[in-house]
Length: 133
Image 1 (cartoon, rainbow, N blue to C red):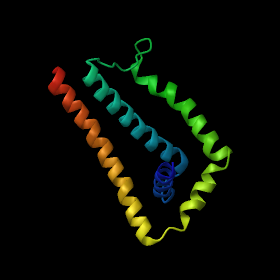
Image 2 (image 1 turned 90 degrees about the vertical axis):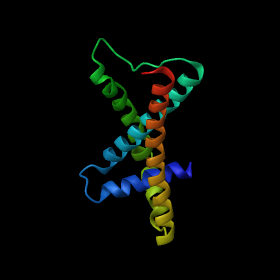
Image 3 (image 1 turned 45 degrees about the vertical axis):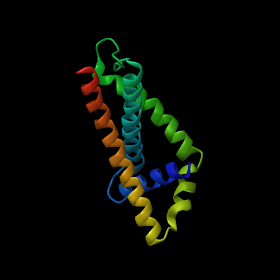
C-alpha cells in the first residue's frame, strides 16, 4: 500500500509544479495506467484460456464509454483522498524524503511506467502472434 501512496505522491508533486488542477491530472494518470494494467492482464488471461475480450460498446457510442466509468471513479477517488483527509496525510508522509530516497523512489516510479507500457505492448504483440489479430 505504501508503494501506491508514493506513486500517488510522486505524480501529484510532478503536476503540482505547473498544472492548474494537479489532483485531477494525477487521477487521470493513475486511471490510464490502471487501464493499461487491466487490459494487459485480460490479454494474458485471454491468450492462456483462448478467450477474446471485447471493449464495451453501449448503443454504438464506443467513444463515450470511458466517461461513463471515469466520472463515478473520480467521485470515489475525490471522496477517499480529499474528503477523508488522506491526500494531506500522504503528502505529509513523504515530504521529508532525502535526496537519495527521492532518486531511488522516482526511479521505481519511472520503471513502473516503462514496465506497464512494455507489458501492454508485449501482450498485444503476443496476441498478434498467437491469434493473428
